[in-house]
Every structure is written in C-alpha cells, then in structure tokens.
Length: 489
Ligand code: NAD
Image (cartoon, rainbow, N blue to C red; front, side, top):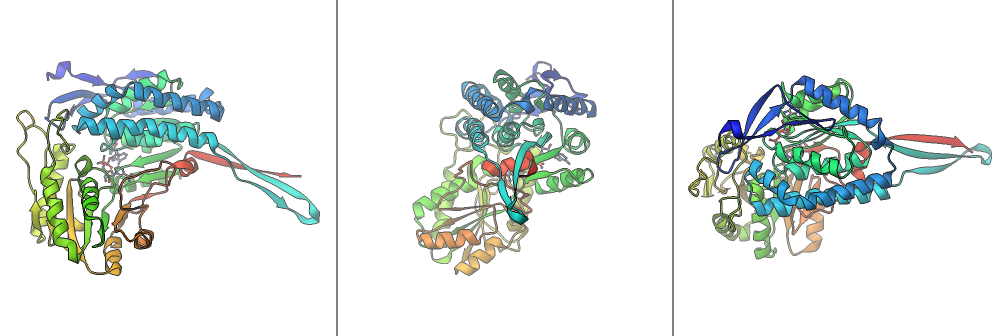
C-alpha cells in the first residue's frame, strides 16, 4: 500500500481526534503490508488527555448512579456486537490472527467483559458493621465506594481488545475516567472503541486514547504524569517493574498482569485424547502468544513417548495461513522483532541440548504471505528445568516436554519458576486433580481444561506474573477507593 494513502490512526482526547508529533507505520504481521500510519502522542497530547479525563471525572460520569452506569456498560456490549465485523477486521489487520479466532475469542469476550462487569457493579455491596461500645451503646460503620480517579490503562498486543475491555469495563463501571495506551503494535481496535463508547452514551473525556511506545514515549509520559491516580497494566514483567518505579514517586496504586512460564502436569491416568486436545490448544492458541499458554509440559514417564508423538502430530496438523482462510488455525507472530526473539530461543534450545521434535524454524507459507512474521510450531525434549528456554518466557508456539515419576517431583518441577500465572493438571483421578491444583503456586490452576474463564473469578499472577487480582468484585477493589463512615448511635 502507498503510505500516503494509508489509514490514519489518531489519538482520542476529550472526544476529539488529535494528531501526534509524528507518525509511525503499523504493518500487518500476516504479510508485512502497511495497515495504518499511527499518530505518536507527544507529552503535550498525553497532558491534554489526562486533563480531559480529570475534567470528565468531575462531570456527570462520576456522579451517575451505579444502575445507570451498568446500563451504559450493557449498551456498550450491544454496540460491540453490532459492530463486531468492523472491530474484528481492525483486530485481524493489526495482529494477522485467524479471523475466526478474533471473532469468537477477542471480540466476543470484549462484549462479555462489559456485560459481566455491568452485573458486578449493579450487585456490589459494601461492608457494614454494627460495633458494640461500652455501656451498651453502638456505632454503625459502613464503607462508601468512590472512583479511584483518572486511571492509566496500558495494554499489550496479544489480545488487544479483550485485554483492554477486561480493564476498561470495571474501571468505567466504578465511575473512573481513563487514558488508554494501547500497544504500538495494535492501535486500531482501541481507537474504534471510542466511537462505540460515544454511541453508547459515554460522555466525552471519559475514554481517551494516546498512541506511542514505552520509554521516552506515550507509555512513560502517562505513567509519570502527576494527574494519574492509578495504573492498570498488562504486559511483560520487566515493563511492570519500570512502571512500578514510575508509580512509586507519587505512591500510586498499580494492578499488574504480567508474563508467565506456565506448566501443564500430565498423569498417566489422563484421558489421552482429551489431554492432547487441551495441550494443543494451550501451547499453540494465538501462536503461543497468550500469557496463559503452556510452555512446560511435565508428563508421567509411562506415557511420555506417546504424548510427545501425539502432540507433535497435532503441531504438524496446524494450518498456518491467510487470516480469512477457512482452514487456517494459526497466525504469525506479531512482529519481525518478536520473531527474532523467538528464533533466538530456538537457537538457544539447541545449544542447551534440546532435541527438536518438530518445528524449530521459519516455515514456507502461501504465496503473498512471505512478508509476514511466520514461525513453526515447535516442541523440544531433552531439556531440564535449569535450561534457560525452560525458565524464560518465549511467548511463541513452543513447549518443552519433560518426564516425571512422582506427584512430588511434578509439583517441585512445576513450581520451580519465578513466574506464577497459570497451570493445568490432566488426570482422571479428581482427588489428585484438586490436590495438585491447590499446591500450584499460581493465580489460576485448571484441571482437565485450560483458559476456561468465569469472569467473576479472580484472575492474576504471583511472583513475576503480577500484583493483585482482577475479575468480579476483585476488580472493584482496585478501581475504587473506599471511605469508611463511622456514626456513633
Ligand atoms: P510490553 O510490556 O512490551 O508492552 C505492553 C505495553 O506497555 C505496551 O502498550 C507498551 O507500549 C507499553 N510499555 C512498554 N514499556 C513501557 C514503559 N517503560 N512505560 C510505560 N509503558 C510501557 O508487553 P507486550 O510485548 O506488548 O506483551 C507481551 C507480554 O504481555 C508477555 O510477557 C505476556 O505474558 C504479557 N501478558 C500478560 C497477561 C496477563 O494477564 N498476565 C496477558 C497478556 C499478556
């Protein structure tokens, strides 16, 4: 595409579209074609966005009764459904993912996020205590929930609209206003969402979007801005630590959903067919670019070879191809830079002694897609827990398979990581499933399934994988402040 005719993605500030200090190119990862020129917000645009959010906080949004705000969230969900094709097309062009995946996972979940948090805020109660005092007197304590304020929302590229709305729905539901910094790799859906929110009756200035990168760019300008009351962030653990330092100066609260190096534990008594289905999905969904994806598979020794063979067969059956292809199961990586990182782990694995069971390189793809950032689904054996590729998050379609002999050994291996996001256990012995899942040092442990979510349940990670939990009423704790009122009766 000729760059002079590429679509422009602008910043959204107080309901207006604002140009940035320069533009940068966004290309489609499936074929390398130009998708848009994105307006890079300088400090002045970030400043205007924070001011617009501050002004809107004192307007009708913050003061709106909770039930009315819940109604607005439901309207947003309906409008997302109405414009699902448009949102899905934008998301597919930014990410190169299979169109069916975008429609069924990303966009569908965006609408569900708003509906789920409409229910949560409409039914949320507060603590109240009747306190006994000397002489038979009493005092009434009750807590009043208020918005946290202007919230900085910084999100990654892997599930752009899903992860943005996961934070946006509770943030708006609690009466906050936001300044969103989408990933530089996926600017489009967050921008399109501004129209949907306006259509649903969200006042100007409640939802602002600034585009750009991290350090020395919109991300850093936002996290260091004195007008931000809290930061909710999803992304890499190292970025989380940079943002935590930025927030520390003004003691601002942070909620972090960070990286993972997630384990699956497969017992010999598992339902092998269902387990291989589940593992295939958990290793390769979204080309392995889901924070919850499994990158370590511990298999009980008697079935180790069978699992390796079956999983490798399934990896070879994945269809890499055009996002609209009816058979396509798997898209590219997000960028050339990310592919270089994943390929460097392919080299490292071999130098650390891995046997490459399948994959390990760059695939041959359909004509027209050779400008894309394609990578082969890859499985390794022959590695132990000390290998760097078994310790560090690769964030690609890869897993190392490692045998074990006892439950104790499996738990020790699975918990031997600095991360603590998710895990799965595969067994037909349900007592063992409960026992193992409860001993996993992770935020989410699944038994005989993976990435099955009830949006009321807590979501987040331990260790390097995050701070805090979001989901259901857990989200309300971050996105609101409480004032406790104590009345002597
Ligand atoms: P990233 O940390 O590189 O970027 C995320 C966002 O932060 C982007 O918008 C980026 O521009 C911004 N950013 C980068 N440096 C910044 C800085 N110094 N200050 C402020 N903002 C900054 O992450 P990514 O590569 O976009 O996403 C992949 C990572 O996200 C993986 O590690 C993955 O595990 C993690 N992730 C975690 C979850 C979860 O729920 N735990 C979900 C999805 C992705």
